Image 1 (tube, chains in turn orange, yellow):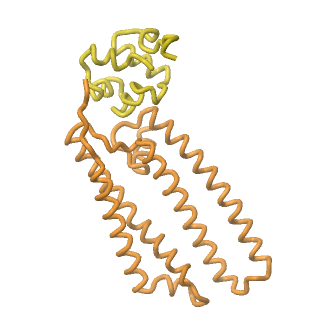
Image 2 (cartoon, chains in turn brown, red):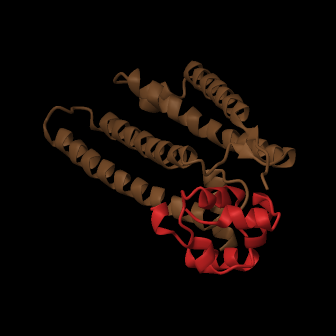
Image 3 (cartoon, one colour):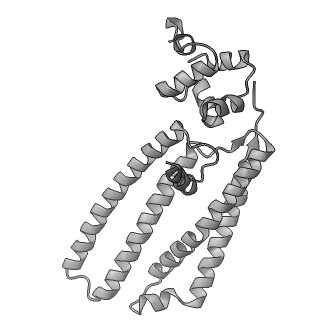
Length: 178
Length: 66
């Protein structure tokens, strides 16, 4: 159970106790996420097969890489966007803290959260950028071009920094009322 | 609603102190007090125990409140 909580805390950036309310929220959001993932996969695989069999595709190797990348991006977006953001919106990760000590803890968790997000964002930006500018050349050659990597890295770092400072600014110390 | 806030104040406990006593997050106490979350029976019993009262008193809803 303790290990489970550690994973939940890490994934959803939960500060403090994982109590029954947080567990219920995670359960509700996870069920929704799984359903959406299922629908996405169902339609995506269906469409992939349809296009593959329609005779519109001539380069099947590139088609294979491309569809896998789009699938990867879709899954990452659904999991990150849907589960983590809707969890944040429900205020389970509270921006209200009782004292300075708690605030420092939340800020440190925020830092960890965005350090974790940078590589994911980097891969996401790199993949989207490659797919949007993809010609019939080798996908990996295009993807790992130094200029593209630098651009994606800079964008991921800047975006994470902006989001970190934005979320940090929202943390307020409330009076712990009696 | 419920009388958790009333009894907590009577016991001179902060939300944080009460949360620590029953092993939940402070935000959960806040949600319960504001009627935004219905706690489990186990949590209700813990609340009643810590606040030295019973479930009927703590979670009773008067007809005129509805």
